Image 1 (cartoon, rainbow, N blue to C red):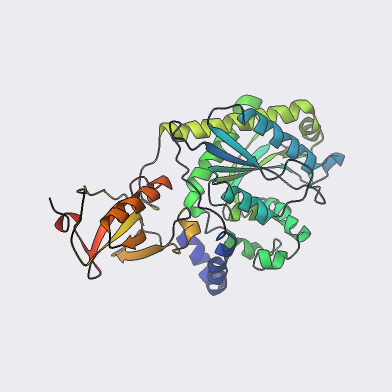
Image 2: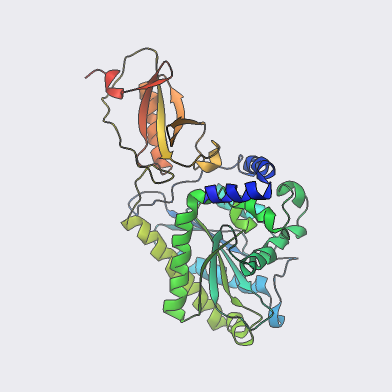
Length: 383
C-alpha cells in the first residue's frame, strides 16, 4: 500500500510536500505513553483497553437528518456499549466524552494513546441526500470512491470548530482529496487489525440485527489518523432515511446497536487471545530468535534488540513502533531491520528485550555487533 501511495504522490508531484507533513505529525504523540500490544492474553494482568468515542458533541451537533441529533444518538450508543463491556472480565473502558461536550478530534486520539488502548471505536450516524440506509464501518485509508471521500469530509469538517486547527493538523484541508493522502501512512502498521475489528462489527450488524451490509471501507478520517492502535469508525445508519432515522433515535434501536457493537468487540478480543500473532515482522518477513546463554564478558560488543524486519521502510519514530524509542534502521539487501535501543551490557540488553516484548514484539531478540558489523551472539558469549 505504501508503494502505491508514493507512486500516486509522484504522479501528482506531491511527494516532497507530504513527506514533510508526515515527518511532522509525530509532535502530537510525543507527550503520550507508549501504546501496548494489540495482542492480549486473558491470563495477563493488563486488561483489554477499549476507548469509546461518541462522535461530535457540544457546539457540534453532527448531522440533523429528520430533525434528530447525531451527537445525542452517538453518545447514547457509546454509553450503553460501555455499560455492557464494563461487566466483562478483564476489560477496561475509557470514554472520550460522557456528556454533551465538544472534544477536539486530536484530543480524542490523545485520550486513546494515553490510555495505552488496544482498540479505538468511534461511533457516528450517516447522512445522504437519498434514502440510503444500512450500517457501515471504516478504517483509515485512501478513499476508493467519491462516496467514501464525502463521508470522511463530513466527519473531518469538525476541525473547523476547533481553535488553532491549522496548527494542530498541519494545514490539513478536509475539502481537498489530495490532503487525505498524508493521513493514511502512519496507521498502516495497524491496518490489518483495524480491518479485523471493523469486519467483526460489520458481521455483528448483519448476523444479529439483519442490517444491510455496507461492508468495511477505507477513507481518510482525521480522528483515526493520530491513534496508534487498531481503530474503527462506525456509521450506525442514516438519520436522513425516514425509517432508519426513527429506529436509531428510538431506545430499542440504540440498545440493539450497542449490543451488536459490544458483541463484536468481545469477539475481536477473543480472536486475539485464541490466535496471537507472534511474528516480529512489520511486513511479511519473520525472523528467528537465536538462543542466548546467561552471561557475557566480551569487550567492544554492542547489543541491539531486533523488533521487526520488513520490506517496508518506516520512519524510525516512536509512534511507528508502539512507543519504543530510540529506533535504528539497517538495510540488508531488500530487507529493513528495525532495532530498539543499544547497550554494551548484555544484562541490560536482556531487560530491553523484555520491555520490547511487553510492548507486543513477542519475538524480539538480541543481536550483537562489533565494529559496526553484525556477529553471531554465540561467538561473544561463553558456552
